[in-house]
Image 1 (cartoon, rainbow, N blue to C red):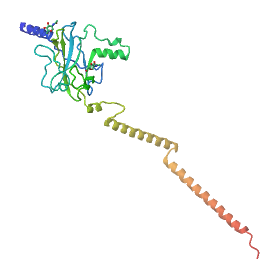
Image 2 (image 1 turned 45 degrees about the vertical axis):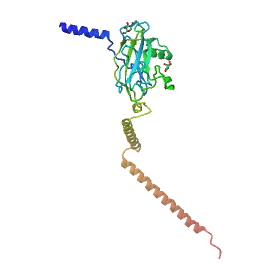
Image 3 (image 1 turned 180 degrees about the vertical axis):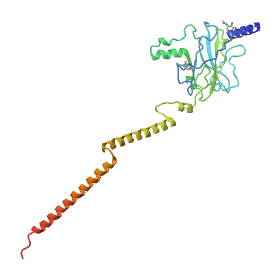
Image 4 (image 1 turned 30 degrees about the vertical axis):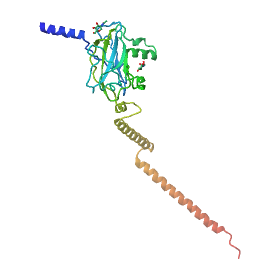
Length: 275
Ligand SMILES: *[C@@H]1O[C@H](CO)[C@@H](O)[C@H](O)[C@H]1NC(C)=O
Ligand SMILES: *[C@@H]1O[C@H](CO)[C@@H](O)[C@H](O)[C@H]1NC(C)=O
């Protein structure tokens, strides 16, 4: 029992001394299209490090391609490495410094209720999130040695880690490496449903079947209406047609008879030339 207790105690101590938290991908409530082809948004480390208030402290964010064999972010003296995007071949050789910002204030996390307009929301998101891959400025100078946060490679898997640097410029705390996060590929993007612009094959088949069914239903309805308009049984309709045809034939015969008769009459009354 005492062994269990002490195990629990030391486990707790371990948690208190080194931050066991991983950087988290931004909550889908705040940002839906994440990751994109070239960017990944992470939540800033609110209430993550032991010391909430730390004057002169800064947080550094490092990123690394999972293909990299090196994972060091500080030297033997605990001083953060100034590796940047260009020199680490975009994180393929070693972790690179993605961003640097002040320690987020744990006691006043961003309040979304206060947001009145879009610019305010953008500001709050900026305080709450860090976007990896959204600054192309440093790409114009290939020899740039400062912090550089240019677009990531598509379909590439990265991991990230925050470290807390105190006023002496040494690492005072750090998170674990994040879970692997993979940027999208163009193929992924085309698979995103952009209804109603794009429809799946299954949807087209269902639509076609439904249209055929509706057509058949309308045709049946039209036939039913026609039948009832013909006044009852189909045989009655045939009889009427037959009768009318006979009448027509008879009357045309009578008419031609009249014509013939009249021509005879005309012959009779044509004055004979006088001999
Ligand atoms: C973009 O990066 C440059 C240096 O690479 C930096 O000076 C600038 O402040 C950054 N811009 C933003 C909006 O972070
Ligand atoms: C800064 O961090 C280093 C390494 O953790 C520590 O030895 C030093 O006392 C810290 N300095 C301050 C002023 O907190």
